[in-house]
Each structure stands twice: as structure tokens, then as C-alpha cells.
Length: 333
Image 1 (spheres, rainbow, N blue to C red):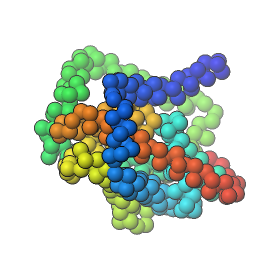
Image 2 (cartoon, rainbow, N blue to C red; image 1 turned 90 degrees about the horizontal axis):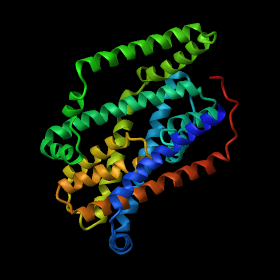
Image 3 (cartoon, one colour; image 1 turned 60 degrees about the vertical axis):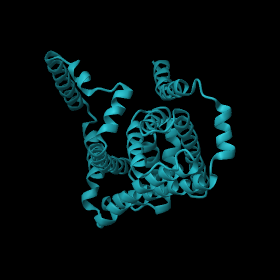
Image 4 (cartoon, helix red, strand yellow; image 1 turned 180 degrees about the vertical axis):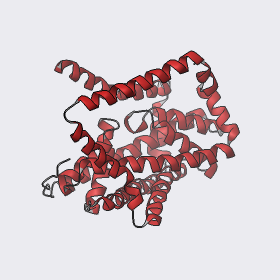
């Protein structure tokens, strides 16, 4: 039994790397890496690239500051720098195990500030919802203003929502709905029969408190500012890199925001830092706006590689900084 669990865990960890690696191999299987090396070492403007990294840092710092604000209504008052270090480490851990960052950053605050793990996890859920709504709004605005380009993107990638939905018959919808109802009913009955139901209720209440923490934030305008600052930083982190290359320097704001949005959506696919899906999605958009295929694949590989390298560096910095902190006596969940 334990061996089966170990195998499943190994598969869950390996699969994102295999998926991302497979996409990258397919994209770059015929690439002239000598020419790309020439671009990287002799043609790229490193001044602009280093400047872009500044906003990669500020995006994560604003996320840590905002997180502290959402924890305060719950009676949790971690140190601001601990919140920032926790965010730095969360991005670094997600490079090793995709989607593990949410858990790791809550664990950091539990260890060093005694913050309730479940309450902090609830606030992370709140953050994700807010960020998703903001990205959804921006996406809708961008799509409406660039309908032709997005139509071409779906054609290029073979994505057709109508075809996907038509694959479901009426019977298929009914069977799916019944299965969902049965699953929910089964889980509800199962939970009621366990003796640790009271424990589960307590855990659920703490998680709910975290999710609803936004309603108790004192300075909602400040929360909105931090949210905008996070995403403006992310955008500048990406857009500034256009100035690093002669072949992208002429591309304007429209190309930047469209490719940024598509790239942000593509990282939903659980690969390390979006490797693979992000490359493919952004490359496709840049080509649709007229960039040569060779230039597009060069841009996405160099930019993603350098900006991803920033993530473990920040994680190492936080590990060193936290090594000088004495762990707090942790609260119970």
C-alpha cells in the first residue's frame, strides 16, 4: 500500500515536468541554438533584462504585503518580512512541485509566526479568487478589443469550444450531473459517519474564516492598490523585456497586453512556472502579430529562462534570512 502511494506521488511530481518538457522539445526540436546563443550573448540588451527583474521582485513583495493585510482581520499578525519570505519560498517550491506553493507559504507563517495554517490557507484562496476575477475582467476587455487576433489564436491552436461542447450529448450531460450529485451525497454521508466530524467542522470554519477575511480588511482601498500593484509589476516584468531585442522593441502595448494575458492563462496547466504552455501560447500570439517564428521562439525561451532563474534565487535568499529566525511555538490547526 505504501509503495503504491509512493508511486502515485512520484507520478504526480514527474508528470508536470514530462508535460512541460514534451512541449518544449516539440517547440525547439529543430531550433538553431548556436544562433540563439549569439542573440543571448551579443545582441540582447542585458540592461533592460535586469531592469525587468526588479518588477519580478516587487510583484512578489506586494503579494506578501497584501497577504499580511488579509490575515489581520483574523487576529493573525505575522511580521511583514515573514509574509514576503513566505511568498518568495512559495514560488521557489512550486518550481520543484507545481502548485505546492500555497501550502508551503502557509507553513512558513505557521512555523515562524504561529499563524493558523488553515486560516492563512483560507486567505490564500481569497487572494486567488480576487486575482482570477481581475484577470478575467482584463481578459474580457482585451478579447473584445482584439477579437480577430483571438479568433486566429484559437484556429492556430486547434481550440474550438463549440466542438468540445458538441461532443457531449444530452445523455452525457445528464449522466455527468447524476454522477456529481451521487459523489457529493456520498461524501456528505461519509463525513457524517466519522467520529472526527467535529474536528472537520472546526477545520472548515477556520478555512471559511480565512476565505471571508476580505470583508474585515480595514483599508479596502489599500488592498485594491496592492492588487493592482501586483499585476502591474507582473506586466512590467514581462513588457520591459520587449526592449531587450531589436526584433521585439517595435512591438507596442497592445501586443504586450494580449500576449501577457494569454501567457497568464496558459500557466493554469500545472508545469513548473508554466514552462511549455507559456512558451507555446506567447510564441503563437507574437507570430500572429507579425513576429518571425525564429524570433518568437528565441524571445520566449530566453525571457522565460532568465525570469524563472530569479525565482530560486529569491527562495534561497529567504531560506538564508529565515535561518536567523527562531521558530515560533506553533498554534494548533
